Amino acid sequence: MSAAVRTIAEFRGLTKTFGPVVAASDLNLSIAEGEFLSFLGPSGCGKTTALRMLAGFEAPTEGEVLLDGEVVNHVEAHNRPVNMVFQQYALFPHLSVFDNIAYGLRQRRPRPDRATVKEKVEKVLEIVRLEGFGPRRIWEMSGGQQQRVALARAIVNEPKILLLDEPMAALDRKLRKEMQIELQDLQRRLGITFVLVTHDQEEALSMSDRICVMNGGRIVQVGTPRELYDNPRTRYVAGFVGTSNFFDAVVAEAGPDHVAARLAGGQHVRGKPGFAVKTGQEVCVSIRPEQIALSREAPEAGMSEPVTILNRIFLGEHTEYLVRSGTLGDILVLVPRQSELNAGTFNVGEEAFVSWDENALLILEQ
Image (cartoon, rainbow, N blue to C red; front, side):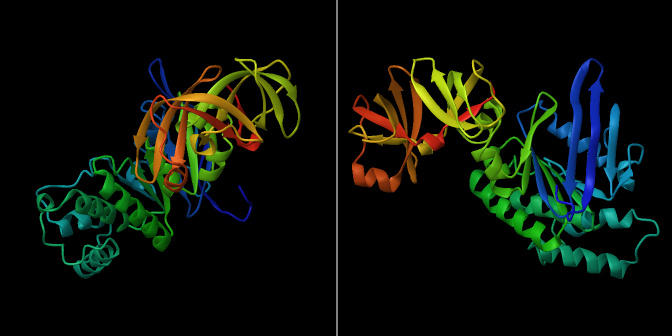
């Protein structure tokens, strides 16, 4: 991380165990002031445990949590400059929207006066676009409106870090996309550091400045969405951040910029290495489905394979084809709408060719 960027939070050798279960292991991570960072991974990967240790709801077994350069392992959650939005929002159903948002302010000591509370609550209601909703009851609000109330309650105390534990999991797809845009806009306007936990790769890719991919309680790779998508180091990251085709291979020749690998079917391919490799090493060759061309005639240049169309799914902006190669097995191909309009639709059972540019292949750790 650049020296010009101030670190607001840090994990140093952070480990959390629950009896014999290791929930998080040796986490080392710096979070920059004002960035939008996402912890991404499947259930049980340790992402929520990492968030809870940052919030102060869990104490680390080993290592340190730092906020503004100070170790806060033993600082209670309510004394940390962070606030959290939970998956189920945790709003008080018997209180109005105004009183839900004001709740945290009224717990402060010394307690702010009524005029100050009213001013702050009305300001955050405006920020989350709920002006005039203060008197409403929570059960009168839609799911998206309840999420905005939860956000307002979290930001009214002006935390340095806002923690979001899968806050959009209960929303439908259309509303989730709308809220993703609103969250990004809110984060930019407020300048607060946002830390999101999600298992949704699309959510992480579309919202984050950086993504921390986790698996088995460990941090696997950290990078910008583009870095993780274009240059994953492992098969796990390539498969979790986006969709990819994978082929087992053995390194035939290792160079600094490109690696020649022999596929299981005997073909030789060249690709960009995502890590240091050596001749004879077993690796994984990866290619994204949108980087594969589908045609009725073999192209004159580049690598191509004859295939049979197994399945076709129309998805609006593109069509997803599952094709089978006699040597490479099943391959997923995404054909843009315009390309299909120009070339025509491929039918199930039809013979065709797949092809790709050499630079599209990645050589990854198994």
